[in-house]
Structures are given as C-alpha cells and as structure tokens.
Length: 435
Ligand SMILES: *Cc1c(COP(=O)(O)O)cnc(C)c1O
Image (cartoon, rainbow, N blue to C red):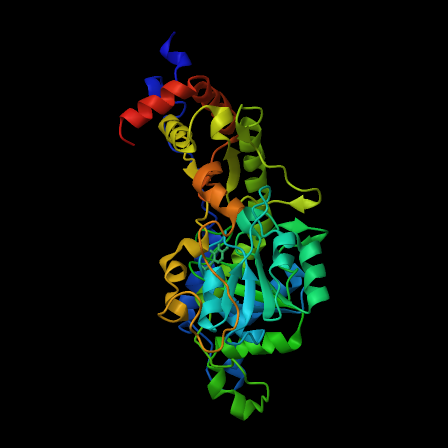
C-alpha cells in the first residue's frame, strides 16, 4: 500500500497543508462607520432618566428601526449582548420566583441563566436527534400548573419546531422566548427565524453571523413588552416614577445599553447579512455533500421549508457502524487538516451550578427555596438524546469560524473515507499515543 492510500493518522500525507480561510465579515464600511462616531465625540446617546435620551442615541435608534423593518416586527430593542437580551426578555414577561420555565439543555449557558436570575426554575426538555432543537412532545410532557414560559433555541443555525411550540403555548397559556443567537438570516414556515416567540433574541458577538464586538437585539410585536424591555435595559426603577408606569414588577433596571459605535457597525453588518448567509449556506452544502454516503456517518436532513444557516455544520457518527470512536475519527480528521470538533453543547444541567443546586439553596434536592413546590431535578439521564449527542454521536465543522472553498470541501470526503477504511488501525494507533 502506498502512503497515498493511508490516512495521516497512519503516516499518510495530510489532505490539507494549510488552514482554511477564516470567517471575517468586518470590512471597510464598518471601519468608516466606527471612525465617524469616534470623530463625533459622542460615543453613547443614552441617559438613564425619563428624558428623550432614555431611548438612546441616533444610531441606536436607526439600528432598531432598520432591524424591525428587516425582520418584519413592530419593535427591535438593542442591548449590549444576547445574554442581556435574554435576561431582559425573562424580566419583561413577568417571570417570578418559583415559576417553572421549560428550556432546552443543548445551548449556550446564558439561555438558561436568566431563568435562575429571576429565581425561577429551569425545567429541561430533551431535544430532537435531527435538528437538535427542543422536542415539542417533551415540552408538553413537562408542563405543570407552575409552568409559565418556554425558551426554545434555534440551535446551530436550525430553527426550532415553532408550529408545534406555538400550538402548545396557546393551549396551555404559556409565553415563548426564542433564542435565535445562532440563526440570524434563517427562515422557517415562511417567516424569519427569531420572529416566532413573544420575544426573540439575537446576538451580535464576534462568533455570530454578523457582529459588532459585543451586542444583541430583542424583537417583539407587543408594545407593552417592548417598553418593559427598554426599562429593564436602562435603569427602569429610576424612570417609572416620572414616566407614570404602573406595571413595575421585575422593572429593576440594569445597564444593558448599546453604544453608538456598536450601533454604527451593526447598521453596516445588517446590510451584509443576506450575502454572508448565502455564502455560508453554499459552503456548508459543499461540506455536507462531502460527508454523504460514508459508512457510520449521518448528515442530518434539513426539514422541508427550513432555511438552515449553519452556525455549526453538525454531523453524527455511529461508533459501531463506523468501526471507531467519535474521538478517534475527529482526531484523525484533525490530522488531515480538517478542524472538526466533538460534541457541540454539553447539557446545561451537567454544570456544577445545577448538579449542586447552588442557585436554589444549599440543602440540595428537593429544592429548599420556600416558594418552590415543584420537583425539578437535574440528574444525569434526564435528557437522553441531548446526553448521547454530547457524549458519543455529534461532531461538527465550525462554519462560524472556518470557510473552506468548494474544492477544499470536496476533498474532505476522500480524507474521511481513508480513515473509515482503516478504522480499526486508526483507533488503535491513536489510543496507543495516549490521546
Ligand atoms: C452566543 C449565544 C448567546 C449569548 O450571546 P452574547 O451576545 O454573547 O451574550 C446566547 N444563546 C446562544 C444560543 C448563543 O449562541
């Protein structure tokens, strides 16, 4: 056998000798826009009192106007991160201590932390093994008289099953938050991702489809929720008196304000969103094609009518069919020069805060908080699909940072095939090196 037939893990020549192009959406337009703000000397327009500047500076307001128009919603509210946006959304909905909020375990931790911040209780519902978004049947099973809201995440660039989630919410009188940090530019059921919940939340941090450094937006069609988010964003407790606001539960304010530099950059980024997303989809489709038809590897199909925007390009490996572990396969592909990674998101309830119930009182299970009468628990085994994806099956190509061209994508297939052809030897060799 020539070394040409061998995977790099067994001494063959690596398929790629240099890294793929990095994802870089920032250009000349953003630079000029930021410089113009700096030259003006007025880097933020916000004042935390009931004056016209309560609503922020001119670029912040322009961004909110353009964002609302682009997404076809009544209101867009800028914030300094999606984390802040999620906190503000939970506050705005009136979630109170002891309420239960059903949420996916497969997400970035901030999706869940806001629930704890308002002393409510996260109840984790398992995910679909195809889209990795929350499974509506699991949500419905977990509803109790204490359930107030559902937070679903449009994870990895897919969009959650909002048709069913909205039906469940309507039937049970629940509120919906959509964390769409990873699905900017996505679509489903003829609508833009992020516009399905009572409140949708987007991120503009540097890992997302478009960014301004740190930033985010909430969207809603509800005038009352929009104003509550504005109050939570900007020192609401100091504003409601003069404003004459009666509805003040949870209107303890933060400083979640976006500055004018970030807004100026975001305005330019929004113009580029569609082009950037199209390019991302084209590249992701080429990578998907490269991994099709390989023994033991599944390329998840995108549900009909969904525009997937590939925050990550997720794939699955069946260790029995592939003849090697996910760890060995991913390592062997890394040796070929393909930056695959294992796992995606660790189920949130694996975090020490949930395992040790730190946020809920010191005596552990059952909850000791005086206001909580339920019995949420965070034992391993709670969400078997989310756990299996994290521990054994899911791996991904980081489309959010790495942009191979079509020809490079095509060469990933033969590289993977060489590894799978020598699966047992690769597993043995990598194990021997102590990994
Ligand atoms: C990035 C991200 C967040 C948090 O966004 P920030 O703007 O960094 O606070 C929340 N949820 C998901 C799913 C994310 O990917």
